[in-house]
Picture 1 (cartoon, rainbow, N blue to C red):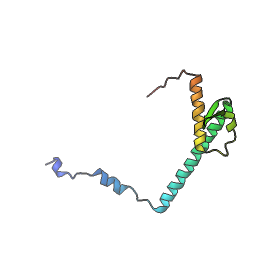
Picture 2 (cartoon, one colour):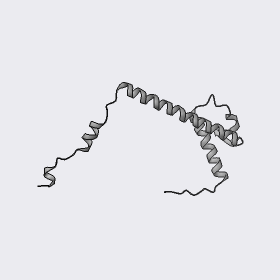
Picture 3 (cartoon, rainbow, N blue to C red):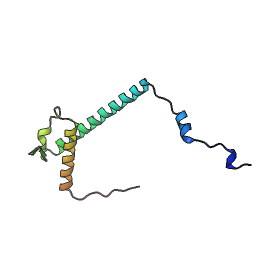
Picture 4 (cartoon, helix red, strand yellow):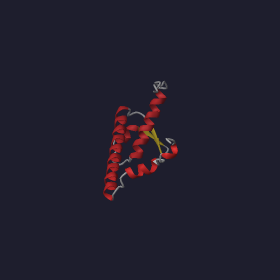
Length: 109
């Protein structure tokens, strides 16, 4: 008498749907503003890191549109976008990898 046939089957998916709250327009607005703030903060960190790299390694050569210039020409970031900042970070990281080919081994848990 205590077998599975006497116990109702529990549909986990339907319980989770009942537990979750339906979001209102205001909830979506708050979530959207939060995402925009996070995006702006991330872009600010990326640009800050690019500026730090430019100060640390001003003699790195960068090739943009077939023209090779020094990285120090990018000191003023006001006219450049986030893609340019990422390009500069990537270029300097490649330069550092070429200069120092030995890599630190990673410890994985």
